[in-house]
Image (cartoon, rainbow, N blue to C red; front, top):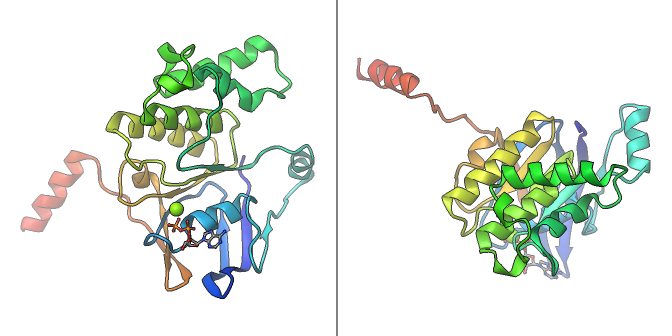
Length: 238
Ligand SMILES: Nc1ncnc2c1ncn2[C@@H]1O[C@H](COP(=O)(O)OP(=O)(O)O)[C@@H](O)[C@H]1O
Ligand SMILES: [Mg+2]
């Protein structure tokens, strides 16, 4: 669960246009990164490169393996880095079928799989919709199904592309529950978003694609505790 990926001299060019050149980057173990940048700077492209869906023009993604166990899990083809698409592709079937699909080859009893899907459905608040056809769900509910399908695979790194675009508060809060659970298990997250929200508040680092490169900076945690806020306000007044 706690893998790290690194890349050097990572660049992407479409014909003559250089989208970005990033001398060095690394994710993990247990990172939470808010990836921001104007429309069209290459956030989606970078996430697709990191997940192996796109090949960069230069550079490649390396996964330093620290021990034989990691090497073994890579050979067995564990899906360690998952890209969660902005408008997820869900197939023609029920909510339950869409989620269980991710673990169809897992060596586990049918009952064990069922229990995992039910846990996932509860976490995203869709347990009463398990047998509904995917087409009757709202956009926010579909995004929650996609998140549940990613969560059930327990990825080491989850790349979330604009997960909160046009989502209601309830759906964002449900995604936060799963994101927090993955972080507690040692996974890393990279989240792109137009505006800050409860999901980006989980992030401890910021990546900003600007002027065709990537700038990294730490993110200060927002003080949520109201008693601390009061203390802060008082000391400010003095
Ligand atoms: N296959 C492609 N061929 C040519 N240009 C592309 C291709 N894919 C993406 N682009 C361009 O790269 C730019 C960055 O796209 P994208 O990564 O989607 O940006 P962002 O997610 O930051 O909005 C856009 O201008 C887009 O048109
Ligand atoms: Mg994008």
